[in-house]
Length: 84
Image: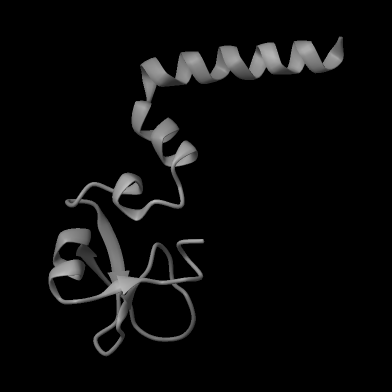
């Protein structure tokens, strides 16, 4: 019975969040897929000399915010650690 109650509450929360913040739900449900996680206008991080883009600071270095579209146009690919 506890499990059914927990599932019901989870379902209610997810339904209420979809009307309030559908982007948040999309991020939670589709995290592995880069193009689904962020629209082309969302920001990612990159370094001046790196070949990958990141969601968060991933190691040492100076990171700069750029749009996902810009990072891909520069030939950068997603970081394997950030985009598991």
